[in-house]
Length: 240
Image (cartoon, rainbow, N blue to C red; front, top):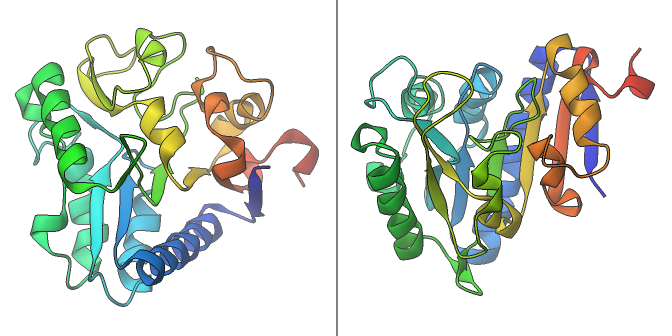
């Protein structure tokens, strides 16, 4: 079953998410000597990343990955890497640059995706030929998309051995992106989805309904999903 936590407001949700991410990273590091965390972009997780940089005392043995990226340079204002650099990495000490695995959006969707798939195969632990990340942090769009997996897109049909795909026709700009596939999301030990604001409430309700290609977030493995929302984005029966 999905683990659902509701918080009073966006700040409380960010704080709860930072604590949960730190707890899972510490647990993974104790169990396996390393922890693999994938980050998403967007405005929602920025505060969580700021808090996480301070919450986790030591970043030794932690590998940073990305769930998706826009096909822009690393210092472009739309870059997910730049967001992480200015929030999480700015507040953390001891992050080894060699353990930050950036999606090279500037190479374009197809070459960037091929290179990232190779990076995952080389550096991430694997089971049944799939990389197993300890935790993937996700947001959700008003249309129910996660990472850059959009409603009814061909990327939803990727085979079980596809790790990373180029996106050429994103319905929101920029149109070219790189994204992890559902095979990687499903293989992760845990996904944490953070949603705040009334604009996300309908998407959260839809994702908790029947699995549907029209709502990609509904296709996540619910037994491995932690959902943290504020009151404004909470499922309708739980709103105060």
